[in-house]
Length: 259
Image 1 (tube, helix red, strand yellow):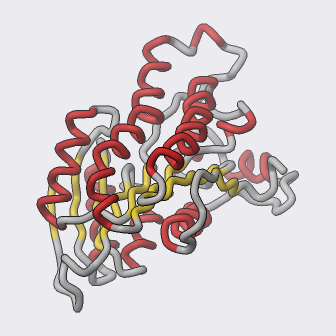
Image 2 (cartoon, helix red, strand yellow):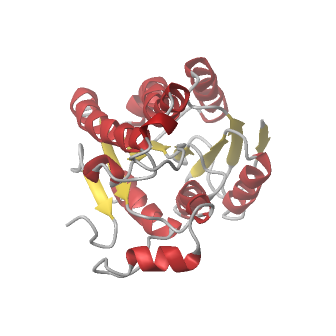
């Protein structure tokens, strides 16, 4: 766990604060940088990729805002509560929570035996319990904000049942349902929404798919390309800061694949 900050023209108490879980790389990093560019102090969270998370922190600080680097496995409820306590101690506020941390195994849906109980449990622990733990711990600070916003990065897998594995699709379907439940229970003080990307060109996906395979997979989509992390960050920023009357929605960003 590390912390670094840079001076700026705003005080810490007057500038809004965003926590982006899983922001060492990919979508999370793109979101963290976008919030920094919008003038937010940013909490960069990571589980294992410390060097990558430190690079995200440097990119955040380059925008002349404060950054805080916190290691935390979001599937650990006690660790999440500790993380939010550190955020309160450091900033005294939280205005936006982005639930981006996630995990999966790439397992053919027909290979039922490979989808072991251990893998089920880990996927649900991170992808479903993790966002809930973060939301629950963040609620007091988000309510104090006066206009708190939560955005969870889900997936079209949670809509179509397709995706890297059955457990992954199920976890994202549950996130979509939980988004609606929490939008009701936390209103009117906090808005709760989700973004559902299709294939995103990240290191995560490139680990199992070549550039040619990804191009072929998306060539039949109306917009004929995969998403990039910045595309998803656009949607996250909109739901967090660009609207005040949107809640309980799962915004699909997939180049038209699922319409």
